[in-house]
Length: 231
Image 1 (tube, helix red, strand yellow):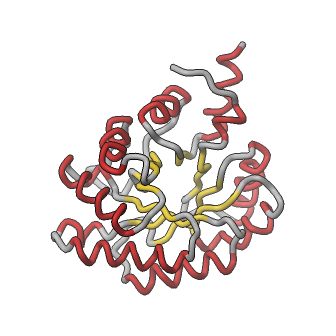
Image 2 (image 1 turned 90 degrees about the vertical axis):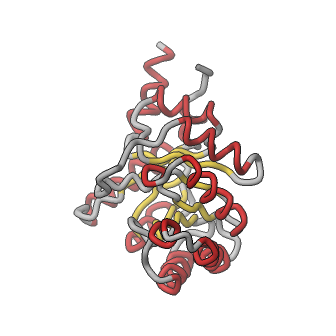
């Protein structure tokens, strides 16, 4: 396991709160805490983008808007509209994490899946776009195909999972998922792991496997564990 500082690790982390029952007070506290740790971003539901923008303006922490979350089955026009709304109401460097249309993918309608992703990339107008392929619902061959489609559509990242617990077959994302995706996209596209990183050890293993971003609800205890490890 390699050495890393708290500050360095924080820049890998998209600190995440996608709880549909979170109140405005909850979200303001969440964003303020993330800001104090200088996490790379806060990942949240799109409706909270204006609140996060107000709190984070001028800081080193940016925003990830979750588009088409959590199922990805919304019409492309809806995803495009949500993307544009997030950008118009967010920080200049806001990022978009969109969910792939898994139903279309499972139906073998790969051209439509690509068109859906490409439309969001276009709507994002140069902002970083990560496409969530939901590895827990895919076999190895499907992960490879989905990663290839995402790259072809022009995304910046392939992301492993939403972390949504409503899927019966949900399993945690693993370093093996990261390695497989990285084998497909190489250095042309980055990889974000989410839905399974809850400890410092898991975070470091994901980075070693090739992840350049980590989505987690446990960012604070993860970076605090670096300080404990150094003592």
